[in-house]
Length: 83
Image 1 (cartoon, rainbow, N blue to C red):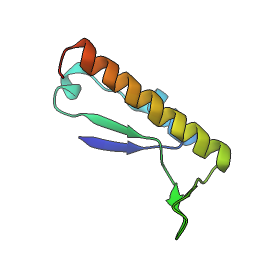
Image 2 (tube, one colour; image 1 turned 60 degrees about the vertical axis):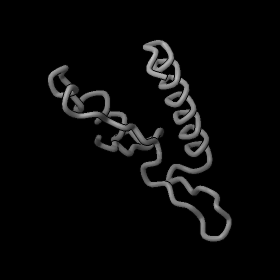
Image 3 (spheres, rainbow, N blue to C red; image 1 turned 30 degrees about the horizontal axis):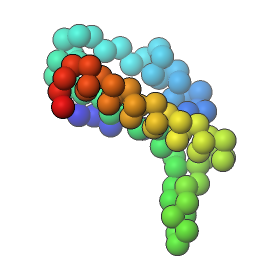
Image 4 (tube, rainbow, N blue to C red; image 1 turned 135 degrees about the vertical axis):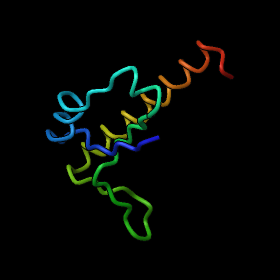
């Protein structure tokens, strides 16, 4: 499994995922990709709050990405009866 950390508002992240990340079926049979929308996000000391490079709107968008990935994953697992 390879972790791909990206930022939801970052043009370079979007460009890489859209144009440069070419995954063939053959490659996907060997490598799994875990998309992690927390690129340059830090956790604030003492407050356990997130500080996103792109500001609070990007933090909000990152949270939405996590929710979408989670529910998509659960739906696929249930569809293929893996749980």
